Length: 242
Image (cartoon, rainbow, N blue to C red; front, side, top):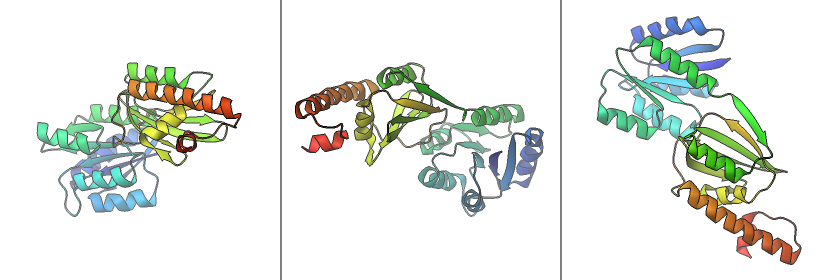
């Protein structure tokens, strides 16, 4: 069962949200915390699928809580609710990593709909027999938010997209651009799709098209080296060191 954590020093808000969300208790369970410090303890003790937090709280406020989540649990989506909103606050919240922002008094119907939408977004899909380059271009065109697990034989890597923009990449002991280039050299890949971006921090600055063009160039270079030396396929990094 999915787990939703509500963090607010106001007992009335915690109680209201808990009562309303009980209507969906067959799908997710609600846990509450009165501040960020208590929320951290909950996160460390049990799996958490979504956090809804206030900003102004004693002990540890919402900004500090989001910073903690961004550093140690970036896979957990965060909604923010506040009675002290405004453009500056909203911009700061979004920069830290919140994916939804609600001003108090809350519209319970809207926040409930957003919770269900976010939890349902974790549904996974799997593709095979498609070019990774073509699929990444499609993700960009559709402004899709997702995490891709890319596999070729015994190798695997991760690509993270937010609204069509590649945020980060990991493959074996590689990261950032180097990891993306490595995966773009793979053929006959299997792609698994998780409709949540599990990395909120942007680690790749290049536009996707630049990455694709450079990845294809490196693939041609590697394929030529393999053909000339009649050597088995090696990770891109090792070939670049030769």
